[in-house]
Each structure stands twice: as C-alpha cells, then as structure tokens.
Image 1: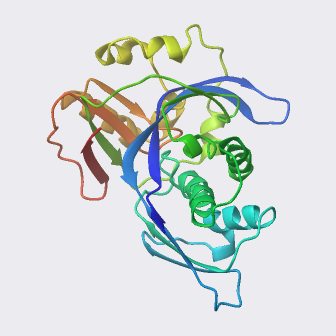
Image 2: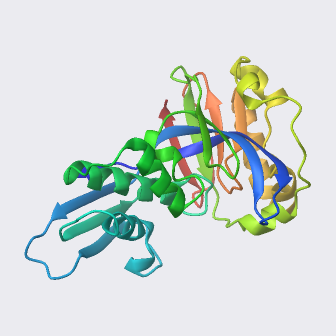
Length: 271
C-alpha cells in the first residue's frame, strides 16, 4: 500500500507566550500543499524482523530506528498486533524548511498502517498517537486547513479555499536553527485572531498576517528576506516564511515566472 505524505505551510505565525515547560504557545494556520513524499508498506510474512526500512530521493542522514516512520510503526506496534513489513520512503520534501515533511511522514505512516491492517483505531486516537511523535504531527491525520494553538497541537478546522491561486515555494540552501529562531523573539499576544484575519481578501493579508520569526531570521539571513521581497516583486498577492524557515512561499493569481539561483529549491504549483 502506498500513500503520499504532503507538506504544509504556515499562514501567519504568532508566538504569544513562553510556557513554564520551556516551550512556546503559538497561533498559526496550517495549510496542506501538494508537495509530497511517497511512502509504501508491503506485508512481508517471511521476514524475521518487525520491519525492513529503505529510502530514496533526498538523502536521510539518520539511522532507520531514528526515522519518524519507524517511530510511528513502533508506537502502533506497542498497542496493536502488526505483522512484519517492508517500508520504503521516497523523500522529496526538503528538510529544515518549515514545511513539516517529517511530521507528515510520521502521521501518514500511522494512517497507512491503520488502513493496511484494518486496525480498530479511531481518528481521535490516531491524533493522540501522532502528537507523541511531534507537535504538528496531529495536523496531518485530518490534513485539512486548521487553526493551531498551544504548541501547534490544539487544532480547529477552518474554511480556507486557495484553489484560485498558484503557490511558489523557495527554499535556499540555509539551515535555520529553530531554538535560535525562538531566542530572537519576544512573545506577544496577538490583537486579532488569525481565524478573523484569513477572512480578509488574500491581497490584504500582507498588511495584517505576519510570521514573528521573520524579523530575527531575516536579520541573520538576509538572503531569506530577499526571497520574500522578490516574490512580491514578481507579483505575489501574499508572501511569507513558513514556520521558522528557511522556505518562503508566495501566493499568485497567475503562474509566476521566477529567476531564483540554482542552489534554491524552487517549486510552483496550482493549489
């Protein structure tokens, strides 16, 4: 059985307060986009191992047991009877981009195993399991536009249709440290909820919807800020960094023509 874990973007990201446990409460809109990995599982009854893992595409610099797909497998196996499987992940979503690619892989693995082996587990239970893998993993169980609060784990469905737009996604060859990005922020409660602001026309978002990480990240990596500026110069209705970076996306009414450096990952698609 095969599935296609997709990336997400953050439309706005407000860091509202630091928690006693050291994490931060935030407010953001998670929006799924059709940039995908491919994940396949095949029942292997002859195997003496619980799983065999392989990968292709973007190189994964980690041991199989450290991969979130395997962590998801082990999490389900601790609660449900799972036969031996071969697992293959073809990686296309860039790492360290603020796109949730790893989280998507883990969540889709849970859903894939549920379907393949007809496990008696509810969507709510899958979300609880996914939350153990990472703060934004639960989002990918439903995989619908969501208003996220808490550490990104409290989700509320939102109505948001961007099917009239093209998305241009640019990731420069820069790794942004998420802890460093948080250190550059002074948490501030937002004056207007993102659930209200996304009701505005997309062309007005640039005046009202921001990503709190941009100020400190752009100061340290001006190349990322330059990409956002170039997206607006190319005609974007709205442009924003996703998560803590380093990817930046733009929403366009017509298919854009961009001239980004070859070192950048560039992806354009109708939503």
